[in-house]
Image 1: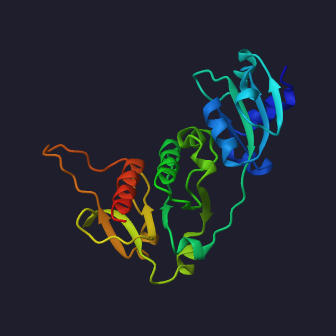
Image 2 (image 1 turned 180 degrees about the horizontal axis):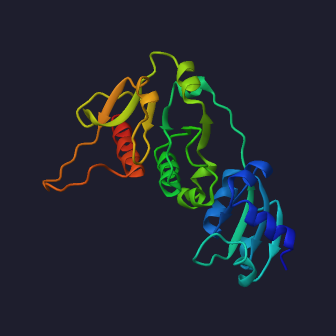
Length: 250
């Protein structure tokens, strides 16, 4: 049986303050957990009702076998899973020399966990190693972000910063791109191999405080002939399109 203390710990990690207190996060589902283990993120505890889990995965942590009904007491998902786990939250520091030679995503107050998890997964797909975020962006280790990232959180470093301090430390020659409705057509404008791509809040876009740092405004054109066309793209979809266009130019 799962101990009451373990159930309490798992359930507490659904809240940011306890994730911060313990420096742990939870992941659910065998595929995501196996992927996270492969990235090298340290596991603290794995609970599973799959008797073959240990044979399929190389682990070095506490492994508890439980029933499906016991796992339901700690899962955050409506659809039952067979495995849940606690991982240690990695501690990263920003290497500005690396960032100046890479393509980097900067998230300005992204609030939807599903959007943010998808952005992390998109960054991983396009070989982007660092995502920098404003302090009010949703927690990267929120369970919903973890699910949407599908293990990519173990391969992409997510940093939370004071935006002004971050941009002030960058070299002035560093290209900073921002997505705007009134920006240049991304398919017709010149793009550099390296730079910062700023993605704004789902409803408000890029904040006024950050707009002064943008060196080039870019825009994904709308090709709809409908008079009642959508006003904007979903933040994670826009990120994928922008990243694809940057990589296509290499």
